Image 1: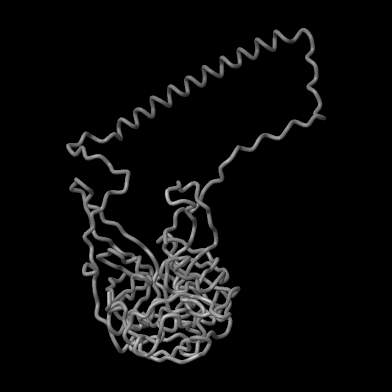
Image 2: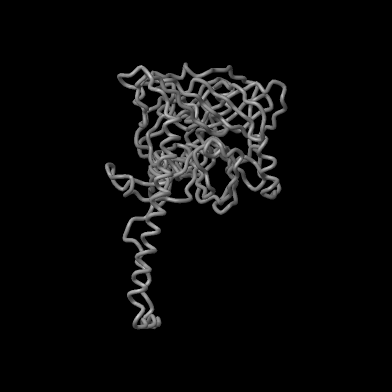
Length: 433
């Protein structure tokens, strides 16, 4: 998903000055006999002002010229021009360039149901020690045809998962990075971090740092399934990479925003709380102060045509996006245990459809052996998975991802007007390319 613009001044004619009221009194008439004297006095005043202004300007110009001549640097043998445009990068980066750490199968996370409602002040006080600023240094690259090297940095936010130093953030922050540093948002030293694993498509990354004996406060993880449109939520992070510990609030605007609209296979949470670059990887908190989402993006504009200029785009406001914590947890736990991601899959191609007035997921093609041997056929309408109704791809994926690879799913399907159950184990589509 590309954010095409942040703001635009409105175009159009300027405002005209207000009309002069017709009832305004006319100036008093001039007295005869004083016109020539007033005219001569005006000329003399103008000449005196011009003379004084000329003297001041002469003195100022000479003074500035003297200062500039003293500050002007001596000529240098290095005549290399300054670059005002972004260099042309030729990056040969690969994930092997990241600083890697080892996974720990003994670490496992779980979300908790919402608790008592807290004040916004207490929510902030409890959440801040559980967040870090993330700074990634990216690989140096050379400009085309030059010998100059460029090194860039990106900033974001991370969520402390355990007292041993595991951190959850967005993958796009560390993409093409060679060094990662973390700093507690409530103050403290910087720490070098290593990557345990990531899921690039879902924009999730797990990091690890050694707190060197310093006590850490793990975030309280909440069940994002409990959210509803209209619920109050809070975003805390590191906007602009420098406004450390900023908090904004808003409501849940929508749930389950899918890949057709926002480019993610996970059902994203849409919020109207202000988030900006640097909030990526930060915490979306519910009214109990639990982390129910990972802020990941904002939508600021839409191109009307592919080649249209940016100033002709549609400007959008108040559309922030966050990854639901309950959907992210299965991937995070798998990364913590193995250092790798996974992709639980059914082995079918399907789409949302309505058949005989019933909503579900219709099978278009059976591609997996397990699904075929279990009896799944083209045209079947999947009504539920493991007892949960599925009327959208987001709802179906949610069941698959939480079941995991090798886990069994029981599907209720509608075929020729009759319902039947089909059970088989999920496979890992990432291993199949």
